[in-house]
Length: 307
Image 1 (cartoon, rainbow, N blue to C red):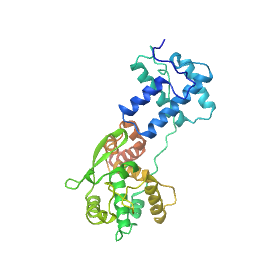
Image 2 (spheres, rainbow, N blue to C red; image 1 turned 120 degrees about the vertical axis):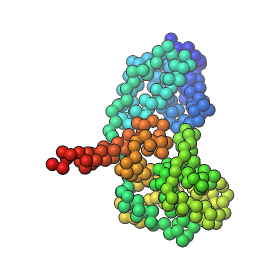
Image 3 (spheres, rainbow, N blue to C red; image 1 turned 120 degrees about the horizontal axis):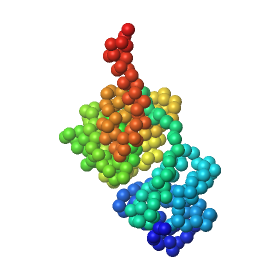
Image 4 (cartoon, rainbow, N blue to C red; image 1 turned 90 degrees about the vertical axis):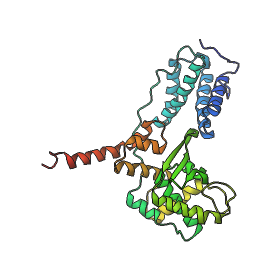
């Protein structure tokens, strides 16, 4: 039997154990508001189910969890959403075990559903060149857009990392960007000389003209930082002007960055570090590129391939 405060019923909108876990994620793990909301929603869903069945969270068993997963599938939850949901539950159970709320982990037998492997959408090198050539660098807004596009591709940035970047996050002497990624983790990314040149010109001659009211690197007409939606609209505009008919987003530049590095001979571990992935499994979506490269090298150099 678990030990802990069960003064609230599972059918309530909250529970002391869940509250304690969310507090842990916020204060000790530093998760974002969006991530916290996602965890809270998943755990509230479990609490609601337990309340409907007149079960208590403290008495949760693997059999009860199996019923809950059956319930989620009956609601039409797809494999990818179900896998994310299970990840939330596992995190909570691991914390509960540390707190000694359970004698045995009720989620130890949980298995993720098999997910279809979706290849990332990326641009060809020729498409990237067309998009990067479009901004009118004779205008302040065009110069700003040019530098943003160059950095998205040169550093594989997430759009959140781009819009949160400050002027002092760039070291022009060594050509390095300090990037603050997910989970408040930062990393250093080198950028190539062409991107450095554009960024140096923007910071020296263009950005002051925006009359900065905030210290973000990229600003709108009012001198304030840009929004995700603003960057997304710019990407869409330039993609359409470049004749790219499929839907792309700022993340497409990140996928293109990783894909082109692997095509050029970089290894997955290096790409993982540059992208800021905590686990190599997140980078393995690009293994199709690595496989194709190895196949081509084999055909090119194996003595029997030319016979």
